[in-house]
Length: 156
Image (tube, rainbow, N blue to C red):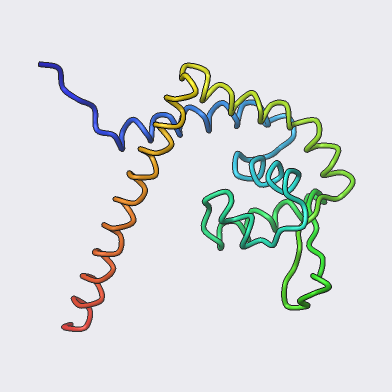
């Protein structure tokens, strides 16, 4: 009987390998993996807010904010006031950011294709469905942990 590898271990290994691939690919431009993916996301979805980009990238808002601030300091991304809601900012690429994102977009497509290459279209659909179930399971455990921690702290 062969030992089954834990799903979390396999997910982490895939994430690590993809991140290493991206880090090597964008090193000449001085970008981190997170900066690269947010640059590509703003390129693909101009006009979204930082919150919307964070959700789209499945990234927590404070991290997205920090990464976007770094991209702004690099003169790649800028935030403009939303004319319909002055409390909200909309993200856009600067001219420099557009040139870089246009240059890097084919690499992003290659990385995404590499993740899908060994799977048939139905397998891709099934894997996405199963990964969503894994995410839901982890979220349920997080919620239980938060409830337990809150009740434990109340008794201290």
